[in-house]
Length: 66
Image (tube, rainbow, N blue to C red; front, side, top):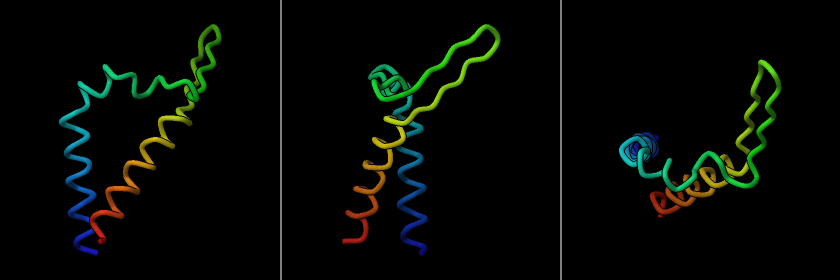
């Protein structure tokens, strides 16, 4: 459990440090993300971004457990 928390903390730190560069790559505005804009409301559902982040985090955890 402690190893998992350390890896998770390092992954969050890494994403936080790389966030300005990741936003330039278009992370958060991928083709599978749903954006609904009305007069006073904008609904944003980042499906593709969540799938991509889930895949990356799963790979990180898999490598950490090996």
